[in-house]
Image 1 (cartoon, helix red, strand yellow):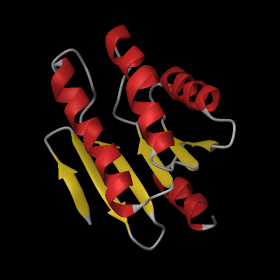
Image 2: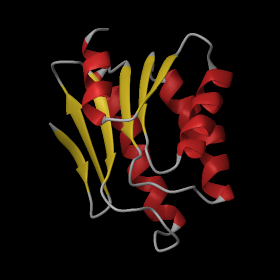
Image 3: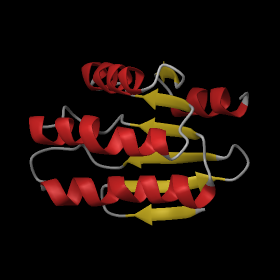
Length: 133
């Protein structure tokens, strides 16, 4: 079920796996303004709450390194909201910017040691892992 769809980001809810899937469509760069990045990410929180999801697949293959303000916003605002909404399992997919994926993993882990986080090189591998939980 599609929750949000824009030119650069698609958010869906996978009913079978009870997971929220985030997939970047375009390589994230300076063309996307702060609010254009943040508003769709808040849709992610809404999807978690509305569907009582506990799993998140973040396919960041087409996302480059975030600017500092967006990175702080993720760490201070978005990730805590996701954990509060019930996040328990995270599958991170990234092949272009492994540093960004590592930062996300560490930020979420610092919020809650109970959240299980795995990094994958392929979207299908991430989906398969979430399907086993």
